[in-house]
Length: 223
Image (cartoon, one colour):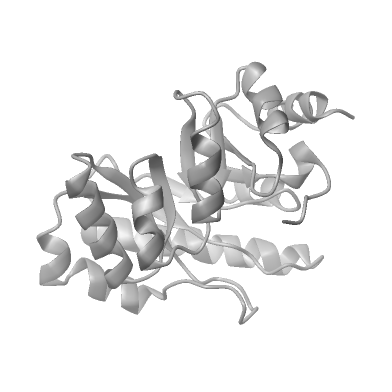
């Protein structure tokens, strides 16, 4: 099927309360434009330089989500254009995002990346680290970042029971953080989990954002 047909097929499987992020990393501008022309305006990138270059060539009303590991020295390429950064995995990174947000006179929506997989290659925080960040004096002084929820990546496996358990753990972590730090905060409501191979399970377990690339764009371009 074409990219456009793939998009419509995926959209039929996602409820209205879940946001579809079309993950466009490594895919050409033309494919992203095709998806945009169909009315879909939410895209995700995971490489700062590629994100910076693409956003300059695409329509200004795209809602950009940065979903990949972000180095502090690359924050300046992302903050001016991203509505959400999904991959906050340290106080140092959050502080740098806040600094750049101040420079750009904006508030950046951020998700805390939680480590839920059994693979060591995956990144993220544990709950102890999350609570330490949120209780820190440094975080309390930040005015230009808004913590809106959590993000996690399940193990790359065909074991659906394991994937489901990991998503359940992320939902439990979200609930714990909400109760302890954001109980009366309406912004803390997002759970970014689920990709092309496991988004159905993620939605069943409470995802509010799914990050789908291959199922829309096809085989990934390597650059």
